[in-house]
Image (cartoon, rainbow, N blue to C red; front, side, top):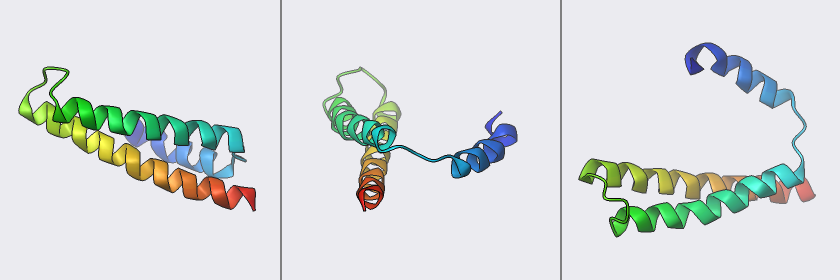
Length: 79
């Protein structure tokens, strides 16, 4: 599904004018969920398999990287 509609979504998002509030919401969400998912994976809170915990930890790292990237974008929007 994403392979078909993904390029159209990317082109549509590139033409949108993003508000600071939207970017701030994503930054806060990523910075809140990243440590929670890393802790849940590291402490095995969800009872996942070893591979599931690794996937959850990877998702936490991706959220952290995206949060940093979005924070940098937010700072550039303020200028």
